Amino acid sequence: MLTDLPTIDLAYAKLEAFGPDLRLPKRDLLRKELPQLTQDQVQEILQQVDLVSKTVWSLAERGGEAKMKKEDIVAELQGAHPFLCSAGLSRAVFLVNYYAWHEGYDR
Image (cartoon, rainbow, N blue to C red; front, side, top):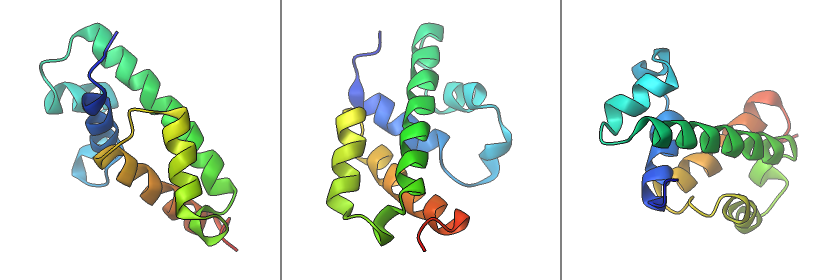
């Protein structure tokens, strides 16, 4: 089990970033960005990233900041995923709003 919560936060931010590395499978990108991780840690992080993505989409479907307070979004993200605290939290909030806008849930 990975107990280094800032590592999971950073990994989420890296794996959900826009850019040329998106073409890489997430497992490969994670190994590139954080080569010190064991195979079990990589698997655990990938599972956590999937869970965060589900929460992000759920919040986006509710309209993101267009229909909710940012503090409520942050509280829900951190309540479900306590490791989100820095770059990962910023990325998650950004994606909530981006997906809400992109899919028209913000209207």
